[in-house]
Image (cartoon, rainbow, N blue to C red; front, top):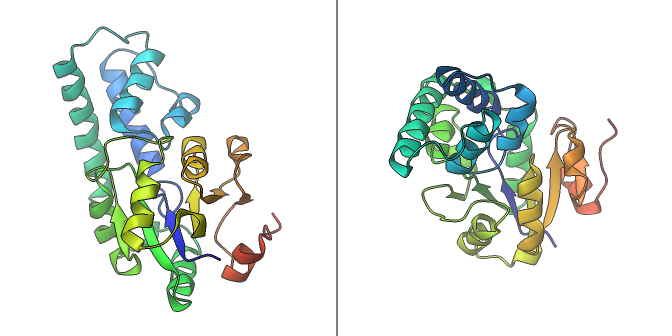
Length: 221
């Protein structure tokens, strides 16, 4: 039985992952080093401060900043990121997502957002997506980052369903692990080989339907 679907935001519903990367890369350059797209992959699905650790480690600068300085660096990055997302529109919702969310709701399946981003609400509003979600769990409501399952467990609680009846849609290995630890099935979105542990995978929501999800049938790539 599938009673609830929980969606990560960045890279699953909207393509904001690139804005995170651009903001981290700008911060890195201001500190005197380059942060490559390949290195940026490691920041997917993890918290802001954990991502800062990844960036500083890439530049050999981990341990050089106090807790207060680290907070200022993270705030600088977030301010730049917010400049990007403040200009987002509904056109930046990934293909097939709105149709699929609508199908879930028409079938009575709960739709929940489970994102570590503290800016999730802003993005949902900018992209006119908030009415499609029954509940939103973001970085303002949880204290432990993925792969800890807290964010998905909280989502199931808000939806009033059992973890076993939830399916998580994720584009990051940390999120797939978090879903497994929560006792939920998972769908790895995108073509990354790091999603091999997902229950099933799909490259995009285009052509994807609830019947395929219920049957565990992966779309042909």
